[in-house]
Amino acid sequence: MTIEEAQAVVDKWINITGVRYFNELTNTAILMEEVGEVARIMARQYGEQSFKKSDTEVNLADEMADVLFVLICLANQTGIDLTDALEKNLEKKSIRDADRHQNNEKLK
Image 1: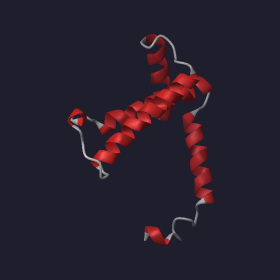
Image 2: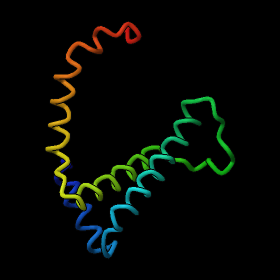
Image 3: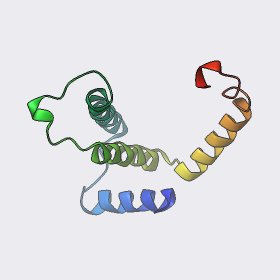
Image 4: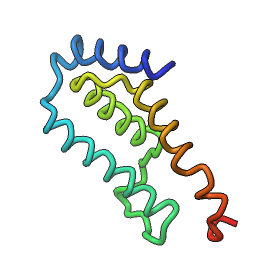
C-alpha cells in the first residue's frame, strides 16, 4: 500500500465506519496518547523498565499502526499529502545532513 492509498483507505474508513473525523485538537491528543503507548513498550522491551502483569498482551506493531492511523487522519484533515511531504522532508534532510552523520564520531 502506498502512502497515498493509505490516506484514501483511512478517509474511507473514517467516513463509513468512524462516522466522521474527530476534530484536529482531539486527534492531536489521541496521537500523543498512541505515541505514549509505543514509548511504554519501547521502555520495557528495549530499555531498563520491566513489564507489569497488565503488559502481557503488548503488540508494538499494532501500536505503531495506531500512531500511523492517527497521523494519517491529521494529514487528511489538514489537506497534507504525506507522500509529497515525506519526499520534500527527505530532500531537505539529504541537503542539510549530507556530511553531518558521516563526520559524527559517535556513529563510528
